[in-house]
Structures are given as C-alpha cells and as structure tokens.
Image (tube, rainbow, N blue to C red; front, side, top):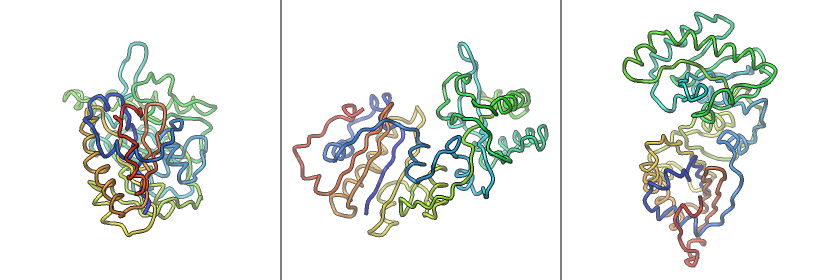
Length: 329
C-alpha cells in the first residue's frame, strides 16, 4: 500500500517556534528522498492530482457542493460564502468563516433575507453554515480569489476581476448594506462575535468529465478533496482520529490520500503534537512493519512544498541524521 499525506501550512513559522521535537516526522523526512517545488494553492494541488483542468477559476464550487450533498448537474456553480469585513488601516480587510463559528440558524436566516431581497437575480443556497452557493446560467468571465487566500488582506486587491466582475462586486456591495442591519448580526455583535456582514464570490465552474482515479481511497473532512473523490467514483471517508484507524479500514493494496485540516492560529502547537502522535508515529511504525510499502509526505511551507518519499529500506540509512523541522522550512 502507498499512503500519501498532504498537510497544509505544515511549516508555519509560528507553529515551528511553538512545536516540540517531532521525532517521527524528523526521521521520515531525514531518511526519505526529498524534493522541493514551488508552493501552489491547496486548490491547485488537489485539482492537479485529480487531473481536473482550471476553468476561469479552479472550479471549487461544484465539487464542494457535491461533497455537501448537492447535485451540481451540468450547471455552473459559484461559492458565495458569508464573511466578516473589518475596517483596516486603509481599507476593508476580510476574515473568512474559518476564523469564527456560524450556526445553521444564523446561516439560513441571513440567506433567506438575501433571497427575499434579490429574488432570482441572486439565489443563495446555504448548504452548510459556512458554505453558500449560487447557481448560474453560465460561467461569468472573471477570476476570483478563494476566501482563505484573501484572509487578512485588503479586499480591494482580492476582489473579482475581469469583464463580469463589476456586476458581482455591485451585488457584494448591495448584500453588505442588507446584512449590516440584520438582527442576526446585531445579536452576534451584542455577544462580541464578528458580524457576517458580507459575502465572498469565488471558485465558479462546472463539474469536469475527467475520469482520473489517482487514489483508491481518500480520507478527508476537506470538502474539495471529498468532492473530487466522489466525482471520480473514489470512496471519500471522514478523516479518522489517527493513521492507525485509517489503516484498519483498508486492505493491503491501493494508494491512499489523507488530508488533515489546516489549523487555526491558536491551534498551531497542539496541531503539531497531534500530527506527530496520530499520524507520523503510526505511519512510521506501519512502514517499519511492512504494513505499508511507501509513504509520501506533501508538506506545505510559506512559499514552497516539500515532498518526501520513504520506503521501508530507507529506514536503515542511519547515516541520514535527523534534523529539526525548522531546517526544512
């Protein structure tokens, strides 16, 4: 069996400063064959592995819609996620919904207000509290920025661009005015929580008819990874608590991908320790015992991706000495 582990933000500077020594991770990196490439977005990496080409954007929306239980069909879909805009030094700054909690009741109340106001001009489908969708007659001629990539940045630099962008930017502005006074946001602000005072358009496209099946099983809570697997007819299973649980659910053959979630800032140190305990240690043990034949790590840094391929015989190369993770950042 060949196991692959893709870890977003693994070499976070803050996370490395807080992390204790991760002996298993350091051993796997030191003993394996390393290759460093330019960092691409999580979306680009996943679509590339599944052989799905870019459209005007990476077509995130129809695949996450599929993972969220929707039926994309032949239609064009776009994400229209609820976000919080805050006043920065010179402009508005975006904080996407991964930075705070959104309840289903809040999501549905805000989406209902938008749908009542816009009617058929813009009909929002809040399939998940933090993931909203628009169904479009045709793909707009514009490029967008994922909410996660725009987080913390001045939105003027990240707004949709292209011939159709003006229409969607106008819809965003109109939605902001409507949401600003909504009772849901008044209640959130009274509790000291960020208001859901705007929506963010991104990831439009249609399901591609590609038939690539790069993996036999995908373990992920990430909706894009799950949606790509489902579209390819690959079993998409919830991310288990640890690698041991994942291996227990599998046979002896196949190529498996696991995608742990990206952490919130406050979770960086705890996440590093959890990755060591729950993933690196049991995968190293499985490699030593022959339960798996190859392990490939895809470890994201600030501007590069470190890929490490390790087989059982590599573990005998004791002269490849362990180094601190910061040496690979």
